[in-house]
Image (cartoon, rainbow, N blue to C red):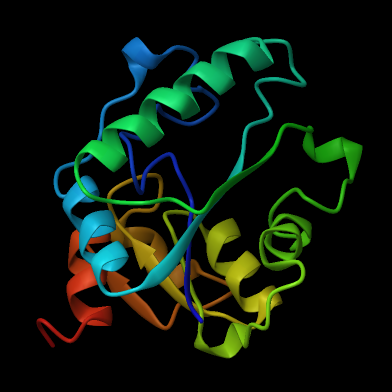
Length: 182
């Protein structure tokens, strides 16, 4: 089974800025090439899961109903573009709640692959933050840092957990995974 785990904000859609959240679908903007990347991965037989911290719910910045609406509309647009997301796993807790599903812990990944025969060494975790890379490493995945969200080129030298690959965006990561460019 070929698996890709994607963070959402900064990978699929425009990063809202540090400490901010996408609170409504009107604030959700697909990044250039993201839908194409998901379509390509889908066509090549990858199972794609979104793993994302969304503490804005626990902080009461926006209600769970808005998160469900954003997700439903995002998935519909991805499917209309030929992509398929197998599952979306959000941690809606705050850091201080110390839950097992909040990245960099791997509870959400474990939920995604429950009852599936998966070798996580063959899976990819693609994210835009050091926390995403740490999550992927904690799960034993190959990790790709995209510079389309929170992390910037100047942050790379200070990373505690080094990604296997650093690229501009999800489409570039996809092309490398699929062997379309080296």
